[in-house]
Amino acid sequence: MTLFDLTGKLAVVTGARRGIGRAMARALAEAGADVIGVSANLEESGSDVEKDVVAAGRSFEAIRTDFADPEAVRALGAELAGRERPVDILVNNAGTIRRTPAAEHADTDWDLVLQVNLSAQFALTRAVGATMVSRGHGKVIFTASLLSFQGGINVPGYTASKHGITGLTKALANEWAPHGVNVNAIAPGYIATDNTQALRDDPARSQAILERIPAGRWGSADDLAGATVFLAASSSDYVSGTTLPVDGGWLGR
Image 1 (cartoon, one colour):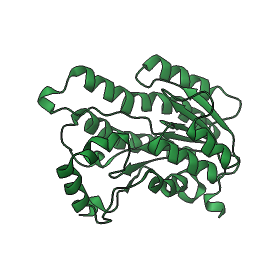
Image 2: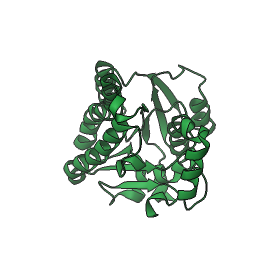
Image 3: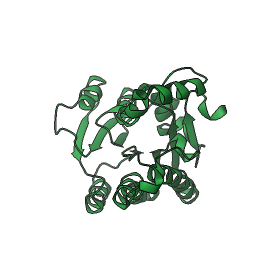
Image 4: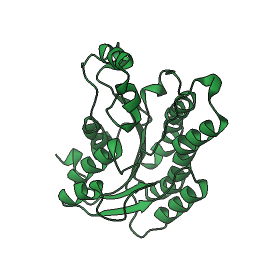
């Protein structure tokens, strides 16, 4: 069990208010980590994710940051990097999506998605990761996507950002692995969250997706729990630069 024991560790989880981020924060807390949750609209107290973490016997701190604001992200990175208690685990899960055919995809949508999903991830990881490198240990986990491997339909900005995440994962891993910092990513499959509501509400698309998934069901946010703890714990100390699909077998078809 010590391979998956996070007792005494401090984890930062972005996009922690709901869905996949909330499930990740809960899983880390149940493995022993204290959690700092970050989200644009996270309640200062009494949030569902806070209740999850406290119920697991761990401490929780809420930070509200808009990842569409580059200055706010840089300020968050500096604040976390300057704390007396260092961050051991950084989970970059915050993200957004805009669904529009490519020929109609507005510059504003493109810029927003790339900022939230890629540029903000790099800025925050650069700040927090530098402290991990200086200490000689740390774990960074990005949330990638099936669209880190495929093109998708009507989501050109999202696809570009998630391809970027897999490249960033490899680039940082190459530089930081010699310093004891593991950088990896998780690629969720079709998970039943707010981001996929439009797909699930479309009978034809939903049926086509289900027919392609060998597991025969949409995933739940809790299906990401095991992979998150694995990549955050000593169990993954020799895993570096990988993107781990958790997709019910989608990419194997």
